[in-house]
Length: 361
Ligand code: SAH
Image: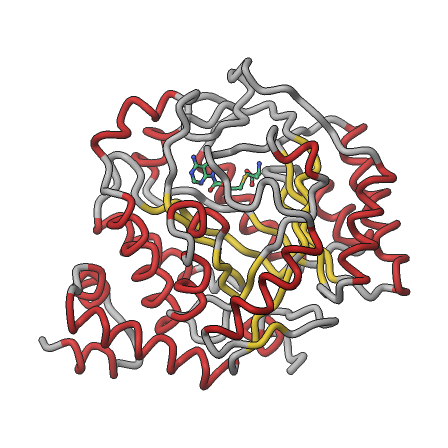
């Protein structure tokens, strides 16, 4: 079937997705033009910001790709103080970012749970509830997720990392701390509790096939997910998966494949929020602009105090590690203007798909 016919379809089937993932040359250009058109029609040219606070790199897990895995003894562990977290959030408020995202390694102890509840409540006080709050703190119990939701967090990001169970266990240890079914069930619990729930995968992993990537996209649609984050896999030298670094697609191929994933998903789910992940910018200086230009609509500028950033290297050479938060601010505005997009300040920028589903729009 020719590409134009596929691009006009209301409902993409797996074989369509596979064709689009393999598109090159003119066909790829047509895909990207269509996904941009669909985004502009449904969501306009607005880009939403989430000021990212990398709260702690202490982690109980040992994911085989992640630089802050507990078994990496080269990392100096930190947790940002309450005062500093609240300063970051104040700064987000002052810069008009509209939302903050709190991300960290995975801890399940009651001290951690209580601390996050406290921080969420304190962030909510800033500007009288002005800031939207996204959490990205890994797998937790239903009670913990509920406690944080009731404290005021309303979005949660938990990437499935790979929706194919066999691939999942090639990139994670196989034990009770790394359990595919549990990660899946966390996503279901988050949705049930009323979070705007986001998930996602890394693109260009060792052992990953186009078939897996097509299934990942179908998985997002089957869960009717509100937000998605997808970025290229970047091998970290202090992790077990680094040994396959010469067997994965090239940097350019991983970038291209990530862009195709974003573009195809925009066709499949026109109103969800999709982030232009920092990993895109790490492997391509214009990676975030490219992601926005093919369908993404969210950027997460880093607000983590600079002294900690070097220790939150989930992958190496992360972009903007030495930038100051206010430099980011003007830089982003100009970058978005350069591709005819507009940063929407002082707004939560919720997922339109989610709001419509819940009768709020
Ligand atoms: N512990 C939290 C936050 C993880 S960091 C959680 O599990 O949700 C956020 C994301 O960074 C991960 O979900 C993963 O998809 C991505 N990531 C980790 N290591 C990476 C690497 N080497 N290359 C690219 N992305 C990576």
